[in-house]
Image (cartoon, rainbow over all chains, first blue to last red; front, side):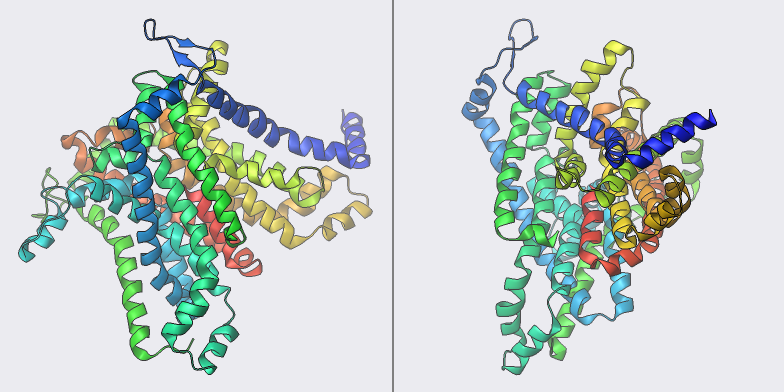
Length: 289
Length: 282
């Protein structure tokens, strides 16, 4: 037994390629065969159909699902709503993230900076569902928001598209703060001093030095805010009665058992994200990740 | 930057507003957990600890916590093995397609959760059901491990790159065989990075909803229990308590993991580590 183990070890020691193959076999075996394989099956399934009479999946390739989606007014509205809110969330998060990121990177002392990094990361990790639920209690008719706005003669947005926009902006905000902070921290102090010495006011320095340099980082953050909104279906279900791409996909997998149509509609966020990632790469956002 | 006093104050206010936006909702839920009344209205009439006792005694909550803990431990162990192996290969060898490995590892978390969930669901039903394995704890573990690999991998690769390979080469020159060199030299040096990765993977798995809805079958994890009970007004006081429990339970591992890997953040620039954490958190 001992000598057999020794022999195996000697072989391993002599042959680095064998060692490498053994290291990679597990992780790649799972990720390539099982995960990429599943994705490939899903992609192929988008071209299958559901037989309208038997409700069985017919495994013959065709563009029927895509035709249904392109011609259905409802699907177009849902796709546009999802993409529109994803864009609005991205802009909102960029605006909310910039001041705190700038403060962390250029003004705070190292100790405060460390505390702020942890303070921003903590909510990112606390449960997604708990956060959506918190907003549900805040936004409800008898909730704290209406209570706070009532003396001013105002009322909150209630459940709907505005609520979805608020909740998504809340959920993904740390994903925007962290890359912008990292991007700002990489701007050398000497550039800002130079702008200062040449007579640039803080506003000018901000507009002509900081913003162009930090743009790739903003785009990097927007990859998260955009992609996470596109794929979500639970938040809209809890704080709105309108549908998102994710809701339609989920219903077709679970309730309607129409995997082909679900797979076809799921290609929309994937294609949007691929185009977005290609644009982001041209803007240099990948170096900021 | 030479900011005037007023613009500094403006930035401080902006920072305060964003922090308040991040923390107030969590605070509201924490307060509701002590709400005397069953109905979730504001203002809260009085405080009580009653719901904490009821939540601890609730059989559904206990079962869900058990399932979640088993799923998170299982997924973490699975991811720990796959992530460490992949990290050793990428950090210590050169081979065709090395860059693709990092991309492949991130993919399950970068794609919308619903796509990953659907893909795994279809595969499990096609491949595992004929073998007699139905959707349940095992498929949840496998599903969670798929997207947890990235946190272990990122932490392990960062540590291995920082360490360099000279100590392992020295061990090898002194006659240590690969497994011995790994056990006596590499592993002790990677320990804190792996622990940090494992804590993050645990937190990630413990909170996950979307992939779980596609892989859990009849079994309920804690987030699935919450999702089901949100539509039952009678159960909401207990949901509040569970929410506070989850907030605290996920904050602790994240804080510890952050402290364990501070050097990596400082050495390689905060950006990759932070973005890694950010990607991973989804």
